[in-house]
Amino acid sequence: MLDDLFVASKGEEGAAKPSIPFDYLAVVDELHSGRIKVSGEVLAEHYRESGAGLATDFAAILADADLSGPGNDHEALPSVDPHTIAAELGLDRPNADLKRLRRDFAFANHPDRVSPHLRQRAAVRMQIANMLIDEARRKALSAARR
Image 1 (cartoon, helix red, strand yellow):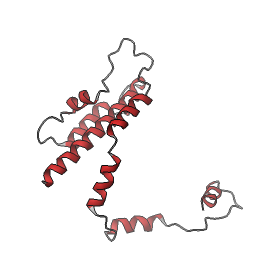
Image 2 (tube, one colour; image 1 turned 120 degrees about the vertical axis):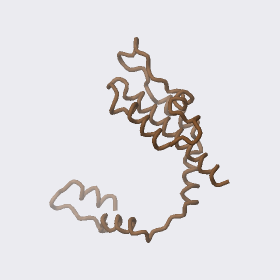
Image 3 (cartoon, rainbow, N blue to C red; image 1 turned 60 degrees about the vertical axis):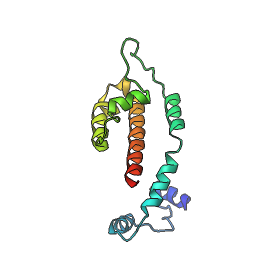
Protein backbone atom coordinates (compact mmCIF):
# COMPACT_ATOMS: atom_id res chain seq x y z
CA MET A 1 0.00 0.00 0.00
CA LEU A 2 2.84 2.41 0.79
CA ASP A 3 4.37 1.69 -2.60
CA ASP A 4 1.06 2.58 -4.24
CA LEU A 5 0.91 5.85 -2.35
CA PHE A 6 4.51 6.68 -3.17
CA VAL A 7 4.03 6.06 -6.87
CA ALA A 8 0.76 8.03 -6.88
CA SER A 9 2.40 10.97 -5.11
CA LYS A 10 4.92 11.36 -7.94
CA GLY A 11 2.07 12.35 -10.24
CA GLU A 12 3.21 10.17 -13.12
CA GLU A 13 0.58 9.56 -15.79
CA GLY A 14 1.24 5.85 -15.99
CA ALA A 15 1.41 5.42 -12.24
CA ALA A 16 -1.02 3.09 -10.59
CA LYS A 17 -3.69 4.63 -8.39
CA PRO A 18 -3.72 3.55 -4.74
CA SER A 19 -5.45 0.21 -4.37
CA ILE A 20 -7.41 1.29 -1.28
CA PRO A 21 -9.53 4.42 -1.80
CA PHE A 22 -9.55 6.76 1.16
CA ASP A 23 -12.10 9.53 1.57
CA TYR A 24 -10.65 12.02 4.03
CA LEU A 25 -13.85 14.06 4.20
CA ALA A 26 -15.86 11.00 5.17
CA VAL A 27 -13.44 10.32 8.01
CA VAL A 28 -13.70 13.92 9.23
CA ASP A 29 -17.50 13.80 9.04
CA GLU A 30 -17.51 10.58 11.03
CA LEU A 31 -15.25 12.06 13.72
CA HIS A 32 -17.39 15.18 14.05
CA SER A 33 -20.68 13.30 14.01
CA GLY A 34 -20.29 12.10 17.59
CA ARG A 35 -20.85 8.48 16.66
CA ILE A 36 -17.28 7.63 17.62
CA LYS A 37 -16.95 7.61 21.39
CA VAL A 38 -13.65 7.53 23.24
CA SER A 39 -13.62 7.04 26.98
CA GLY A 40 -12.14 9.93 28.94
CA GLU A 41 -10.44 7.40 31.19
CA VAL A 42 -8.70 5.78 28.22
CA LEU A 43 -7.51 9.17 26.99
CA ALA A 44 -6.33 10.13 30.47
CA GLU A 45 -4.37 6.89 30.77
CA HIS A 46 -2.67 7.45 27.41
CA TYR A 47 -1.86 11.02 28.41
CA ARG A 48 -0.36 9.88 31.73
CA GLU A 49 1.73 7.24 29.96
CA SER A 50 3.03 9.76 27.45
CA GLY A 51 4.00 12.18 30.24
CA ALA A 52 5.66 9.56 32.44
CA GLY A 53 9.19 10.54 31.47
CA LEU A 54 8.98 14.33 31.86
CA ALA A 55 12.36 14.54 33.57
CA THR A 56 13.92 12.52 30.78
CA ASP A 57 12.20 14.72 28.19
CA PHE A 58 13.54 17.87 29.87
CA ALA A 59 17.06 16.46 29.91
CA ALA A 60 16.85 15.36 26.26
CA ILE A 61 15.54 18.73 25.12
CA LEU A 62 18.30 20.58 26.92
CA ALA A 63 21.02 18.18 25.79
CA ASP A 64 19.97 18.26 22.13
CA ALA A 65 19.64 22.02 21.91
CA ASP A 66 22.62 24.11 20.90
CA LEU A 67 21.81 26.98 23.22
CA SER A 68 24.87 29.06 22.42
CA GLY A 69 24.06 30.77 19.14
CA PRO A 70 25.98 33.54 17.42
CA GLY A 71 25.85 36.95 19.04
CA ASN A 72 25.02 35.62 22.49
CA ASP A 73 28.33 36.56 24.11
CA HIS A 74 27.16 39.87 25.58
CA GLU A 75 23.43 39.23 25.72
CA ALA A 76 21.59 37.83 28.73
CA LEU A 77 19.78 34.75 27.45
CA PRO A 78 16.35 33.72 28.72
CA SER A 79 16.56 30.89 31.19
CA VAL A 80 15.66 27.32 30.24
CA ASP A 81 15.55 26.18 33.87
CA PRO A 82 12.13 24.58 34.51
CA HIS A 83 11.85 26.22 37.96
CA THR A 84 12.53 29.66 36.51
CA ILE A 85 10.02 29.12 33.72
CA ALA A 86 7.42 27.89 36.23
CA ALA A 87 7.93 31.06 38.27
CA GLU A 88 7.74 33.15 35.09
CA LEU A 89 4.47 31.44 34.17
CA GLY A 90 3.03 32.00 37.63
CA LEU A 91 2.13 28.36 38.22
CA ASP A 92 2.44 28.88 41.96
CA ARG A 93 -0.68 31.09 42.03
CA PRO A 94 -3.80 29.30 43.27
CA ASN A 95 -6.60 28.94 40.71
CA ALA A 96 -4.38 30.11 37.86
CA ASP A 97 -6.04 30.11 34.43
CA LEU A 98 -3.68 27.68 32.70
CA LYS A 99 -4.98 28.45 29.22
CA ARG A 100 -4.37 32.16 29.76
CA LEU A 101 -0.88 31.47 31.17
CA ARG A 102 -0.03 29.39 28.10
CA ARG A 103 -1.26 32.08 25.70
CA ASP A 104 0.53 34.90 27.53
CA PHE A 105 3.80 32.96 27.67
CA ALA A 106 3.53 32.05 23.98
CA PHE A 107 2.85 35.66 23.06
CA ALA A 108 6.06 36.76 24.76
CA ASN A 109 8.29 33.75 24.02
CA HIS A 110 7.17 31.99 20.84
CA PRO A 111 10.07 31.26 18.43
CA ASP A 112 8.30 33.15 15.64
CA ARG A 113 8.26 36.31 17.78
CA VAL A 114 11.93 36.45 18.82
CA SER A 115 15.18 37.29 17.05
CA PRO A 116 16.51 34.57 14.74
CA HIS A 117 19.51 33.81 16.95
CA LEU A 118 17.17 33.17 19.93
CA ARG A 119 14.69 30.91 18.14
CA GLN A 120 16.17 27.60 19.25
CA ARG A 121 16.24 28.73 22.87
CA ALA A 122 12.67 30.05 22.53
CA ALA A 123 11.54 26.68 21.17
CA VAL A 124 13.09 24.91 24.16
CA ARG A 125 11.44 27.40 26.53
CA MET A 126 8.06 26.84 24.88
CA GLN A 127 8.43 23.05 25.12
CA ILE A 128 9.31 23.25 28.79
CA ALA A 129 6.48 25.70 29.51
CA ASN A 130 3.98 23.45 27.72
CA MET A 131 5.17 20.41 29.69
CA LEU A 132 4.90 22.34 32.97
CA ILE A 133 1.41 23.61 32.16
CA ASP A 134 0.26 20.13 31.09
CA GLU A 135 1.59 18.71 34.36
CA ALA A 136 -0.17 21.43 36.38
CA ARG A 137 -3.37 20.73 34.47
CA ARG A 138 -3.08 17.00 35.19
CA LYS A 139 -2.58 17.72 38.89
CA ALA A 140 -5.55 20.10 38.97
CA LEU A 141 -7.79 17.52 37.30
CA SER A 142 -6.73 14.75 39.68
CA ALA A 143 -7.28 17.07 42.68
CA ALA A 144 -10.75 17.99 41.39
CA ARG A 145 -11.72 14.31 41.16
CA ARG A 146 -10.99 13.73 44.82
